[in-house]
Amino acid sequence: SAMSIPETHKAIRFHETGESYDVLKYESVPTPTPTSSEILIKNKYAGVNFIEKYFRIGLYPAKLPYTLGREAVGEIVSVGSEVEGYQVGDLIAYASASTFSEYTIINPSENFRILNIPKNATDEQLQLYAAVFIQGFTALTFIEEAYAVKKGDYILVHAAAGGVGSLLTQLITRLGAHVIATASTPEKLALAKSNGAEFLINSVSEDITAKVLEYTSGKGVQASFDSVGKDTWDISFNSTARKGTIVSFGNASGAVPPISINILSGKNLKVLRPTVFNYIGTKEEWEYYSQKMLKLISSGELKFDISKIYKLEDYPKAAADLEGRKTTGKLLLSI
Ligand code: NDP
Image (cartoon, rainbow, N blue to C red):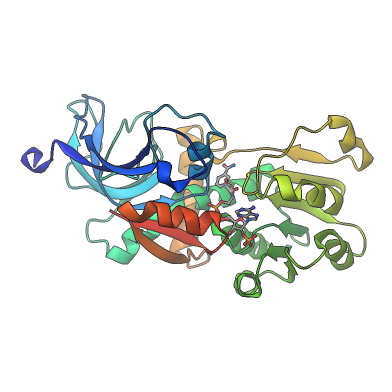
Protein backbone atom coordinates (compact mmCIF):
# COMPACT_ATOMS: atom_id res chain seq x y z
CA SER A 1 0.00 0.00 0.00
CA ALA A 2 1.01 3.63 -0.47
CA MET A 3 1.49 3.84 3.32
CA SER A 4 4.54 1.60 3.13
CA ILE A 5 6.43 3.70 0.57
CA PRO A 6 9.15 5.60 2.42
CA GLU A 7 9.86 9.29 1.76
CA THR A 8 13.50 8.56 1.04
CA HIS A 9 15.36 5.49 -0.18
CA LYS A 10 18.89 4.40 -1.03
CA ALA A 11 20.52 4.70 -4.44
CA ILE A 12 23.98 4.58 -6.04
CA ARG A 13 24.79 8.00 -7.50
CA PHE A 14 27.71 10.21 -8.42
CA HIS A 15 27.92 13.99 -8.14
CA GLU A 16 31.14 14.33 -10.14
CA THR A 17 32.62 12.09 -12.82
CA GLY A 18 35.88 10.26 -12.27
CA GLU A 19 37.90 7.10 -12.85
CA SER A 20 37.97 6.55 -9.08
CA TYR A 21 35.27 4.38 -7.53
CA ASP A 22 35.23 6.96 -4.71
CA VAL A 23 32.89 9.14 -6.78
CA LEU A 24 30.22 6.45 -6.33
CA LYS A 25 27.95 7.28 -3.38
CA TYR A 26 25.40 5.06 -1.67
CA GLU A 27 23.01 7.69 -0.39
CA SER A 28 19.46 8.62 0.52
CA VAL A 29 17.34 10.23 -2.18
CA PRO A 30 13.70 11.38 -2.16
CA THR A 31 11.24 8.71 -3.35
CA PRO A 32 9.36 10.12 -6.37
CA THR A 33 5.55 10.08 -6.60
CA PRO A 34 4.27 8.79 -9.94
CA THR A 35 2.32 11.16 -12.19
CA SER A 36 -0.91 9.90 -13.76
CA SER A 37 1.05 8.16 -16.53
CA GLU A 38 3.81 6.62 -14.41
CA ILE A 39 4.39 3.61 -12.18
CA LEU A 40 6.70 3.23 -9.18
CA ILE A 41 8.69 0.01 -8.88
CA LYS A 42 10.36 -1.39 -5.78
CA ASN A 43 13.43 -3.11 -7.20
CA LYS A 44 14.62 -6.54 -6.07
CA TYR A 45 17.58 -7.14 -8.39
CA ALA A 46 19.39 -4.91 -10.87
CA GLY A 47 21.78 -6.04 -13.58
CA VAL A 48 25.32 -4.66 -13.68
CA ASN A 49 26.63 -3.58 -17.08
CA PHE A 50 29.92 -2.23 -18.34
CA ILE A 51 28.20 0.92 -19.64
CA GLU A 52 28.03 2.29 -16.08
CA LYS A 53 31.76 2.94 -16.27
CA TYR A 54 31.33 5.17 -19.32
CA PHE A 55 28.88 7.37 -17.40
CA ARG A 56 31.04 7.43 -14.26
CA ILE A 57 34.21 8.49 -16.09
CA GLY A 58 32.39 11.02 -18.27
CA LEU A 59 32.84 9.20 -21.61
CA TYR A 60 29.04 9.30 -22.01
CA PRO A 61 27.22 12.46 -20.83
CA ALA A 62 25.27 12.30 -17.55
CA LYS A 63 23.14 14.89 -15.82
CA LEU A 64 24.48 15.28 -12.27
CA PRO A 65 23.80 13.95 -9.72
CA TYR A 66 23.37 10.76 -11.73
CA THR A 67 21.77 7.52 -10.53
CA LEU A 68 23.36 4.50 -12.23
CA GLY A 69 21.63 1.33 -13.49
CA ARG A 70 19.89 0.33 -16.73
CA GLU A 71 17.78 -2.74 -15.92
CA ALA A 72 16.02 -4.35 -12.97
CA VAL A 73 13.30 -6.63 -11.75
CA GLY A 74 10.87 -5.53 -9.08
CA GLU A 75 7.33 -5.14 -7.82
CA ILE A 76 4.98 -2.34 -8.83
CA VAL A 77 4.04 -0.42 -5.66
CA SER A 78 2.17 2.57 -7.09
CA VAL A 79 0.29 3.15 -10.36
CA GLY A 80 -0.78 6.47 -11.92
CA SER A 81 -4.51 6.94 -12.51
CA GLU A 82 -4.25 6.80 -16.33
CA VAL A 83 -1.93 3.81 -16.59
CA GLU A 84 -3.49 0.76 -18.20
CA GLY A 85 -2.34 -2.84 -17.95
CA TYR A 86 -0.31 -2.60 -14.74
CA GLN A 87 -1.40 -3.05 -11.15
CA VAL A 88 0.10 -2.75 -7.71
CA GLY A 89 1.64 -6.10 -6.82
CA ASP A 90 2.65 -7.01 -10.41
CA LEU A 91 6.22 -8.23 -10.87
CA ILE A 92 8.07 -6.86 -13.90
CA ALA A 93 11.52 -6.83 -15.45
CA TYR A 94 12.31 -3.64 -17.33
CA ALA A 95 14.97 -1.50 -18.91
CA SER A 96 15.31 2.05 -17.63
CA ALA A 97 17.84 4.44 -16.21
CA SER A 98 18.20 4.77 -12.41
CA THR A 99 17.80 1.14 -11.37
CA PHE A 100 20.68 1.04 -8.84
CA SER A 101 18.07 2.27 -6.45
CA GLU A 102 15.44 0.87 -4.12
CA TYR A 103 12.70 2.59 -6.13
CA THR A 104 12.51 3.54 -9.82
CA ILE A 105 9.78 5.43 -11.63
CA ILE A 106 8.90 4.76 -15.28
CA ASN A 107 6.29 5.73 -17.83
CA PRO A 108 5.28 2.34 -19.25
CA SER A 109 3.81 3.70 -22.49
CA GLU A 110 7.08 5.44 -23.40
CA ASN A 111 9.30 2.96 -21.65
CA PHE A 112 7.59 -0.11 -23.10
CA ARG A 113 10.40 -2.64 -22.80
CA ILE A 114 8.79 -4.54 -19.93
CA LEU A 115 8.48 -8.26 -19.26
CA ASN A 116 5.64 -9.42 -17.02
CA ILE A 117 6.73 -12.02 -14.50
CA PRO A 118 4.37 -14.51 -12.86
CA LYS A 119 3.51 -13.58 -9.27
CA ASN A 120 4.67 -16.97 -8.04
CA ALA A 121 8.14 -16.54 -9.57
CA THR A 122 10.98 -17.97 -7.51
CA ASP A 123 13.91 -15.86 -6.38
CA GLU A 124 16.02 -17.63 -8.99
CA GLN A 125 13.59 -16.67 -11.75
CA LEU A 126 13.65 -13.05 -10.60
CA GLN A 127 17.44 -13.10 -10.84
CA LEU A 128 17.27 -14.54 -14.34
CA TYR A 129 14.92 -11.80 -15.56
CA ALA A 130 17.16 -9.13 -14.01
CA ALA A 131 20.01 -10.55 -16.09
CA VAL A 132 18.25 -10.66 -19.45
CA PHE A 133 17.76 -7.12 -20.64
CA ILE A 134 20.87 -5.25 -21.72
CA GLN A 135 23.28 -8.07 -22.46
CA GLY A 136 20.65 -10.53 -23.70
CA PHE A 137 18.92 -8.23 -26.16
CA THR A 138 22.28 -6.88 -27.33
CA ALA A 139 23.39 -10.36 -28.33
CA LEU A 140 20.00 -11.27 -29.80
CA THR A 141 19.55 -8.16 -31.95
CA PHE A 142 23.16 -7.87 -33.10
CA ILE A 143 23.44 -11.38 -34.56
CA GLU A 144 20.31 -10.70 -36.58
CA GLU A 145 20.65 -7.03 -37.57
CA ALA A 146 24.23 -5.82 -37.10
CA TYR A 147 25.52 -8.85 -38.92
CA ALA A 148 23.04 -11.61 -39.84
CA VAL A 149 25.03 -14.66 -38.79
CA LYS A 150 24.70 -17.61 -41.16
CA LYS A 151 25.46 -21.30 -40.88
CA GLY A 152 29.10 -21.97 -41.69
CA ASP A 153 30.31 -18.42 -40.95
CA TYR A 154 33.46 -17.88 -38.93
CA ILE A 155 32.81 -15.22 -36.30
CA LEU A 156 35.31 -13.55 -33.96
CA VAL A 157 33.88 -12.85 -30.50
CA HIS A 158 36.11 -10.69 -28.31
CA ALA A 159 35.81 -10.96 -24.50
CA ALA A 160 33.82 -14.14 -25.06
CA ALA A 161 33.52 -15.03 -21.36
CA GLY A 162 31.93 -11.70 -20.47
CA GLY A 163 28.24 -10.92 -20.16
CA VAL A 164 27.49 -10.12 -23.80
CA GLY A 165 30.30 -12.39 -25.05
CA SER A 166 28.87 -15.51 -23.36
CA LEU A 167 25.48 -14.91 -24.94
CA LEU A 168 26.89 -14.09 -28.38
CA THR A 169 28.92 -17.30 -28.26
CA GLN A 170 25.84 -19.41 -27.46
CA LEU A 171 23.59 -17.74 -30.04
CA ILE A 172 26.16 -17.79 -32.85
CA THR A 173 26.98 -21.45 -32.19
CA ARG A 174 23.26 -22.25 -32.20
CA LEU A 175 23.03 -20.86 -35.74
CA GLY A 176 25.67 -23.30 -36.93
CA ALA A 177 28.49 -20.78 -37.28
CA HIS A 178 32.02 -21.25 -35.92
CA VAL A 179 32.91 -19.05 -32.96
CA ILE A 180 36.52 -17.96 -32.56
CA ALA A 181 36.61 -16.73 -28.98
CA THR A 182 39.12 -14.50 -27.22
CA ALA A 183 39.54 -14.03 -23.48
CA SER A 184 42.36 -13.14 -21.11
CA THR A 185 42.70 -16.35 -19.07
CA PRO A 186 42.52 -20.13 -19.59
CA GLU A 187 39.55 -20.27 -17.19
CA LYS A 188 37.63 -17.72 -19.25
CA LEU A 189 38.48 -19.60 -22.45
CA ALA A 190 37.20 -22.84 -20.91
CA LEU A 191 33.93 -21.07 -20.19
CA ALA A 192 33.74 -19.85 -23.81
CA LYS A 193 34.32 -23.43 -24.93
CA SER A 194 31.49 -24.68 -22.72
CA ASN A 195 29.26 -22.12 -24.45
CA GLY A 196 30.13 -23.59 -27.84
CA ALA A 197 33.23 -21.71 -28.99
CA GLU A 198 35.22 -23.89 -31.41
CA PHE A 199 38.52 -21.96 -31.45
CA LEU A 200 40.05 -20.32 -28.38
CA ILE A 201 42.61 -17.51 -28.36
CA ASN A 202 44.25 -16.08 -25.25
CA SER A 203 44.10 -12.35 -25.86
CA VAL A 204 47.01 -11.62 -23.53
CA SER A 205 49.56 -14.20 -24.62
CA GLU A 206 48.66 -14.97 -28.24
CA ASP A 207 48.62 -13.08 -31.55
CA ILE A 208 44.89 -12.94 -32.21
CA THR A 209 45.04 -11.99 -35.89
CA ALA A 210 47.64 -14.67 -36.70
CA LYS A 211 45.48 -17.30 -35.01
CA VAL A 212 42.29 -16.13 -36.73
CA LEU A 213 43.96 -16.32 -40.13
CA GLU A 214 45.27 -19.80 -39.28
CA TYR A 215 41.78 -21.01 -38.28
CA THR A 216 40.16 -19.51 -41.41
CA SER A 217 42.71 -20.69 -44.00
CA GLY A 218 44.00 -17.15 -44.43
CA LYS A 219 40.58 -15.70 -45.28
CA GLY A 220 39.55 -14.06 -42.00
CA VAL A 221 36.15 -13.97 -40.32
CA GLN A 222 32.81 -12.95 -41.82
CA ALA A 223 32.24 -10.73 -38.78
CA SER A 224 34.05 -9.51 -35.69
CA PHE A 225 31.91 -8.65 -32.66
CA ASP A 226 34.21 -6.21 -30.89
CA SER A 227 33.28 -4.72 -27.52
CA VAL A 228 36.84 -4.12 -26.39
CA GLY A 229 37.26 -1.09 -28.66
CA LYS A 230 40.54 0.79 -28.64
CA ASP A 231 42.90 -2.15 -28.02
CA THR A 232 41.28 -4.44 -30.60
CA TRP A 233 40.28 -2.19 -33.51
CA ASP A 234 43.37 -3.12 -35.54
CA ILE A 235 42.92 -6.79 -34.65
CA SER A 236 39.31 -6.79 -35.84
CA PHE A 237 40.26 -4.86 -38.98
CA ASN A 238 43.06 -7.27 -39.88
CA SER A 239 41.10 -10.41 -38.92
CA THR A 240 37.98 -9.68 -40.98
CA ALA A 241 37.55 -11.29 -44.39
CA ARG A 242 36.93 -9.48 -47.67
CA LYS A 243 33.30 -8.21 -47.65
CA GLY A 244 33.19 -8.88 -43.91
CA THR A 245 31.63 -6.83 -41.12
CA ILE A 246 33.12 -5.24 -38.02
CA VAL A 247 30.51 -4.72 -35.33
CA SER A 248 32.21 -2.31 -32.93
CA PHE A 249 29.89 -1.99 -29.95
CA GLY A 250 31.84 -1.11 -26.85
CA ASN A 251 34.77 0.65 -25.23
CA ALA A 252 35.97 -1.75 -22.52
CA SER A 253 39.59 -0.73 -23.24
CA GLY A 254 38.73 2.83 -24.29
CA ALA A 255 36.95 4.44 -27.25
CA VAL A 256 38.04 3.57 -30.79
CA PRO A 257 39.94 6.56 -32.24
CA PRO A 258 38.46 8.19 -35.37
CA ILE A 259 39.07 6.28 -38.61
CA SER A 260 39.06 7.33 -42.26
CA ILE A 261 36.37 5.51 -44.25
CA ASN A 262 38.83 5.06 -47.10
CA ILE A 263 40.54 2.25 -45.20
CA LEU A 264 37.45 0.09 -45.75
CA SER A 265 37.99 -0.21 -49.51
CA GLY A 266 40.95 -2.55 -49.06
CA LYS A 267 38.54 -5.42 -48.32
CA ASN A 268 35.13 -3.79 -48.96
CA LEU A 269 34.49 -3.98 -45.23
CA LYS A 270 31.33 -2.89 -43.45
CA VAL A 271 31.63 -1.22 -40.06
CA LEU A 272 28.81 -0.62 -37.60
CA ARG A 273 28.67 1.02 -34.20
CA PRO A 274 25.22 -0.09 -32.99
CA THR A 275 23.38 0.17 -29.67
CA VAL A 276 20.82 -2.36 -28.54
CA PHE A 277 17.80 -0.12 -28.12
CA ASN A 278 18.12 1.38 -31.58
CA TYR A 279 17.16 -2.12 -32.72
CA ILE A 280 14.23 -2.21 -30.26
CA GLY A 281 12.81 1.24 -30.85
CA THR A 282 9.15 0.38 -31.44
CA LYS A 283 6.56 -1.78 -29.68
CA GLU A 284 6.53 -4.10 -32.72
CA GLU A 285 10.28 -4.60 -32.48
CA TRP A 286 9.96 -5.18 -28.75
CA GLU A 287 7.19 -7.74 -29.32
CA TYR A 288 9.34 -9.57 -31.88
CA TYR A 289 12.54 -9.72 -29.83
CA SER A 290 10.93 -10.28 -26.43
CA GLN A 291 8.95 -13.26 -27.74
CA LYS A 292 12.12 -14.64 -29.24
CA MET A 293 13.99 -14.16 -25.96
CA LEU A 294 11.28 -15.82 -23.86
CA LYS A 295 11.34 -18.85 -26.17
CA LEU A 296 15.13 -19.13 -25.96
CA ILE A 297 14.94 -18.98 -22.17
CA SER A 298 12.08 -21.42 -21.70
CA SER A 299 13.56 -23.94 -24.14
CA GLY A 300 16.87 -23.77 -22.29
CA GLU A 301 18.68 -22.86 -25.51
CA LEU A 302 20.14 -19.68 -23.99
CA LYS A 303 21.72 -19.84 -20.56
CA PHE A 304 22.38 -16.82 -18.39
CA ASP A 305 25.32 -17.42 -16.12
CA ILE A 306 24.86 -15.25 -13.03
CA SER A 307 28.33 -15.47 -11.58
CA LYS A 308 27.96 -13.15 -8.61
CA ILE A 309 25.35 -11.15 -6.71
CA TYR A 310 26.47 -8.08 -4.75
CA LYS A 311 24.50 -5.94 -2.34
CA LEU A 312 23.36 -2.60 -3.78
CA GLU A 313 25.73 -0.74 -1.48
CA ASP A 314 28.63 -2.88 -2.75
CA TYR A 315 28.26 -1.72 -6.36
CA PRO A 316 31.72 -0.05 -6.24
CA LYS A 317 33.21 -3.51 -5.61
CA ALA A 318 31.18 -4.98 -8.49
CA ALA A 319 32.40 -2.18 -10.77
CA ALA A 320 36.02 -2.75 -9.74
CA ASP A 321 35.71 -6.49 -10.39
CA LEU A 322 34.04 -5.99 -13.80
CA GLU A 323 36.39 -3.27 -14.98
CA GLY A 324 39.37 -5.16 -13.56
CA ARG A 325 38.60 -8.10 -15.90
CA LYS A 326 37.99 -10.38 -12.91
CA THR A 327 34.46 -11.48 -13.81
CA THR A 328 32.60 -13.78 -16.20
CA GLY A 329 28.95 -13.87 -17.23
CA LYS A 330 26.43 -11.66 -15.47
CA LEU A 331 26.69 -9.68 -12.23
CA LEU A 332 23.63 -8.59 -10.27
CA LEU A 333 22.91 -6.26 -7.40
CA SER A 334 20.52 -7.43 -4.71
CA ILE A 335 18.37 -4.55 -3.50
P1 NDP B 1 31.86 -7.92 -19.85
O1 NDP B 1 31.31 -8.89 -18.89
O2 NDP B 1 32.10 -8.37 -21.24
O3 NDP B 1 33.18 -7.31 -19.24
C1 NDP B 1 34.12 -6.69 -20.04
C2 NDP B 1 35.21 -7.67 -20.50
O4 NDP B 1 35.99 -7.02 -21.50
C3 NDP B 1 36.19 -8.07 -19.43
O5 NDP B 1 35.77 -9.15 -18.65
C4 NDP B 1 37.42 -8.39 -20.22
O6 NDP B 1 37.46 -9.75 -20.60
C5 NDP B 1 37.26 -7.57 -21.51
N1 NDP B 1 38.28 -6.51 -21.61
C6 NDP B 1 39.22 -6.42 -22.56
N2 NDP B 1 39.99 -5.37 -22.37
C7 NDP B 1 39.55 -4.76 -21.25
C8 NDP B 1 40.00 -3.62 -20.52
N3 NDP B 1 41.04 -2.88 -20.92
N4 NDP B 1 39.33 -3.30 -19.41
C9 NDP B 1 38.28 -4.01 -19.00
N5 NDP B 1 37.83 -5.12 -19.65
C10 NDP B 1 38.47 -5.48 -20.76
O7 NDP B 1 30.90 -6.64 -19.88
P2 NDP B 1 29.44 -6.47 -20.54
O8 NDP B 1 28.98 -7.78 -21.04
O9 NDP B 1 28.59 -5.71 -19.63
O10 NDP B 1 29.74 -5.53 -21.77
C11 NDP B 1 30.66 -5.93 -22.77
C12 NDP B 1 30.88 -4.79 -23.71
O11 NDP B 1 29.74 -4.61 -24.53
C13 NDP B 1 31.16 -3.45 -23.07
O12 NDP B 1 32.12 -2.76 -23.85
C14 NDP B 1 29.83 -2.77 -23.17
O13 NDP B 1 29.95 -1.39 -23.15
C15 NDP B 1 29.33 -3.27 -24.50
N6 NDP B 1 27.88 -3.22 -24.65
C16 NDP B 1 27.37 -2.47 -25.66
C17 NDP B 1 26.02 -2.40 -25.88
C18 NDP B 1 25.49 -1.62 -27.02
O14 NDP B 1 24.27 -1.47 -27.14
N7 NDP B 1 26.33 -1.06 -27.87
C19 NDP B 1 25.07 -3.08 -24.97
C20 NDP B 1 25.72 -3.89 -23.97
C21 NDP B 1 27.07 -3.93 -23.82
P3 NDP B 1 38.89 -10.48 -20.74
O15 NDP B 1 39.45 -10.54 -19.36
O16 NDP B 1 38.59 -11.81 -21.31
O17 NDP B 1 39.71 -9.62 -21.66
